[in-house]
Image 1 (cartoon, rainbow, N blue to C red):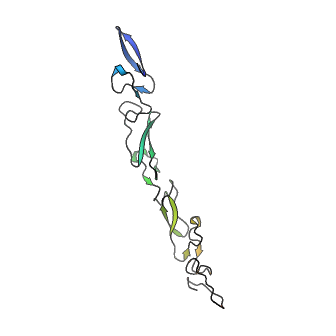
Image 2 (tube, one colour; image 1 turned 120 degrees about the vertical axis):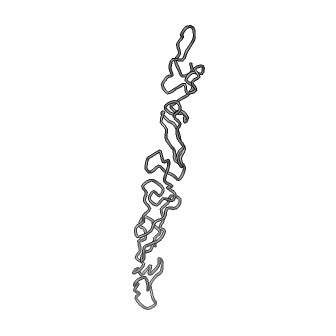
Amino acid sequence: FAGGNGECRSSVCVLIGCIVGRDNCDANDTNGCETDIRSNLMHCGRCGNVCPTRANATSFCSAASCGITCAAGFDNCDRVDGNGCEVDTRTNISNCGACGAVCAPPGATGQCASGTCTVRSCAAGLGDCDGVVSNGCETVTASDLSNCGACGATCAPANANGTCMSGTC
């Protein structure tokens, strides 16, 4: 028998068991142990054990165990297969681009767009003058002569020393 063992009983060949990793899921002894239960989505690990469909994921059966592969842009951050790939890492501020990657630039409100952390807005009196997300809104525009009130706004009055106070030159 394919994938199984047989013996002769009263001049009739009968299936007596399946080899490891195979089973007779259709209960038809003539085709032997037709199912590879190590990789079959409908019979994973044993006959009738269907690997369930999960949110934002593709199910698989490997080594007789069900698992999931996340769709692009999603991840299983809580590591619970039962709720699928529950996080959209393209837009989630707490998991931006990857599980646990928090988008929180210093002095700023972050935004996760296409899995990339960006500065959405700066706290009052601050500016993101260098465009580097990792240091966030690094410039104090309330008092910086080179960035007075806004990035790139130089406080240099003609024939005088400028002072930037509360973002006004």
